[in-house]
Length: 420
Image 1 (tube, one colour):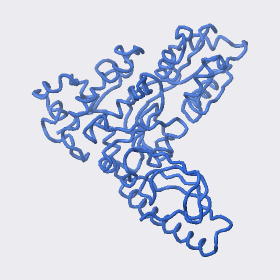
Image 2 (cartoon, one colour):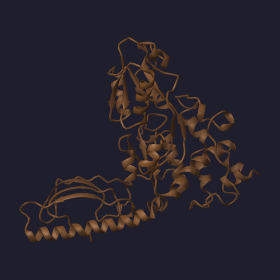
Image 3 (cartoon, one colour):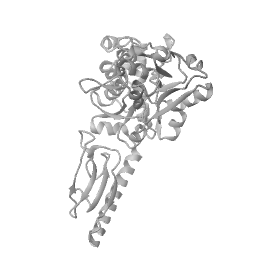
Image 4 (cartoon, one colour):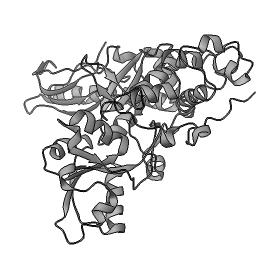
């Protein structure tokens, strides 16, 4: 039996954990019988919240002024009991910190996505998420649930992604998450691997006559240009460091999120916009009414190792996320594709045979069966297939692989061997 709501006013946010009430957000008045006026509910998942192993709700409860002393005592006792129950259940969940079991329990992967534009992560005309980061979610879902489509995409942004992850509302965040020492050691999150090597650059209105970093340096003495940049991103810190280093005359205009700068840029409220180069290519192609009116600088002025982000309290989940990605890289190196995987099962290469589940051992230590690599490759593809489909020559963006090429092709993509 669910404990009744106390009389008074209630502000409640429930993240769908092992808490005594279903998931919703509510602000309104409660009668003496605990009934709500102005109830507003929004489910966070199609699954029952009682099967979620995340956080309990956060509540601010205040009894109304005309509530009797006895009712107030009853309210306090029930509230304390509910809070104690939530704390005990959360303590048990945190001690276990087993994201894999959580995902298996609900049968679905909750994947946080930042809206980074077409090619990376964006909602298409049918209302479905598409892009490189989306396929990273699908590859992980294929490995741990058995089906790449068993994933719930939950939109986050640069301002809330860490908090959403730490609260347990998502199992992983796939997006333009730059791996830094500060983030890796102070925020309670970890970066298992790098799935895109990128760098920060500028996009400018072509009419300004600036098309490179050197062009900006030549503007000494000219009226300063304005640049839009998102707060709570590495982009703002990189920009400030570059301005300090070069003495460039720029007026920095900050927006709450990275995406928030696109509208003021395309409406000429900013002369420049800065972000990762791949992000800029997507915004120019799909965000501009005429992409020819904008130029992306060829140079970069930062290193942007982008990767998935997970909570730092679950080493097995960290390893799973890392190796799901590395298997896509190894599959490309070994020539395994979504279409030829069946034929490759007869290969004499031991890594190929293990990756495809012919030989045992791929799931050992991860808590997965040996067929998870087969599912990733056949349902989603190898790294090259994923890149080309969304970012490379098979996509409208047609971005060269560059550092994201295989190590045998001059890039940085390199998967360790699978071992005995």
